[in-house]
Image 1 (cartoon, rainbow, N blue to C red):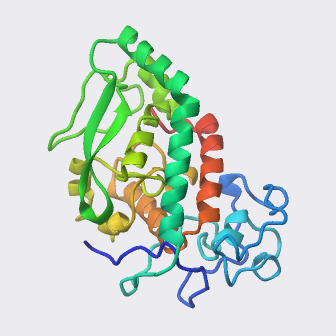
Image 2 (image 1 turned 90 degrees about the vertical axis):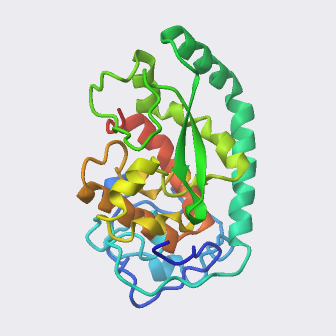
Image 3 (image 1 turned 180 degrees about the vertical axis):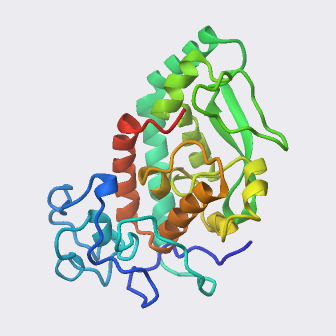
Length: 292
């Protein structure tokens, strides 16, 4: 694996080589000028959220900033662009309750999600069978934590189920996508079966999105530090997705930006940041036109 293990469970004390967070804005995420009170986090202790070393007074950027600057200093670059993963030594293992706490949130969140969404899940399954011939679920090989392979579950949205050495990414107006599949992909409802992956431990609610094994092989040699994404469990949603990196990655440059965002998330992880990403995911589902 190209990088070190995850820093989950570590604090967010600022290293000198991290990107400056002061003056950063989350205008691309629609969070410019957001405050802890506006995010219903008033009264919450930053230290209790795993944010030791960051304070509202010390982290608040002059001229307006973003909630992510408070949750994970250095996650957003000064220019508000995607953070570029800089060369650095392998990250050291971090002790603490962070990984166990994240796993607990995954189990509780995925379990409650399946219970609450069960009627919707059953309705989608019926509609898929009615809309086009083929299985309800699509299973594809992916690479997860520690480069271990697993099978991701999704609702079938195409007339084909590619899972080989060559997997062609979906494109705009792709004729392989079914009528219902276009709706499911645009709203990300096709990802709901991955709640089962979370319960099984192969995925997390939040983390780098897993790619098809064929795409891993394609980009591993052309995208810097690509394999370091496997230092944590892949997620149903992630920092890259709420920063606009949904949908097709047609070239190494577009994949590099996604990887840079994934690595920034891994380095600056906190439970509060996970909760922020889950909230932003709901907004992204309703506004994004990049998934097709």
